[in-house]
Length: 274
Image 1: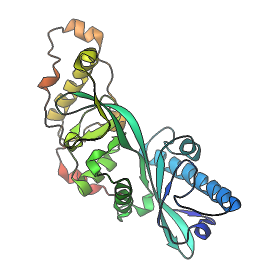
Image 2 (image 1 turned 120 degrees about the vertical axis):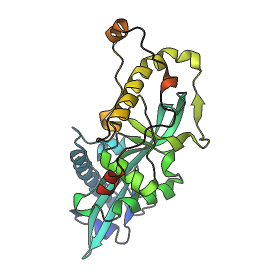
Image 3 (image 1 turned 180 degrees about the vertical axis):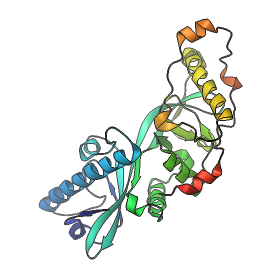
């Protein structure tokens, strides 16, 4: 866990803060000198925690940094602890809206401006202590959303297990990008939805369906592994040579399981906690 020099002097009582593009906590007030100094401290925290998060997730480069946040409309929630008048950083949660093309459980394609979880990390020394749940719940209350309304960018198995354990989310709708949606995502009306006419997306859906079929076939036979979603499962374009060799293959999306994918071994879920 990282000790941050001088941070306690600026934020003696706060345990969770929300940071936007100005790299200052929401509702922070101070003179120009204090604001510049605190902004520099926050920048260093975001760089350090972003690197730690990327390392923990096996990513080649950080998703979160001070510069990335400064040049975006995203927000980062930082979880902290106080000890002996010192401030320690416990976790990070990065949120932002994205315009995404998303499939529902029936194979219909939607264009939707969606709130997304972009990065989530709890320091290794503070995992399995409830810090992740507290931080995630704070974000949900602040944004006034419920868990299944969020799209998750490249979630790890650890994160998927966290969502199952604390929020009961496990029925995944496969997507053609790195994002993960749960079946409940489309259960309630959502502002900002724009359905795409079927005739403009026939080719896209035909190309996409082969990989979706393979994914479901794999899930029906592989009972000892987590499904490969998110980081490891961005769909690739189907092979045109394969279609020539096997032109009779049924590529209909309707053959897919409409209920979404469920994990097979629930015992895995209890092995992880943020």
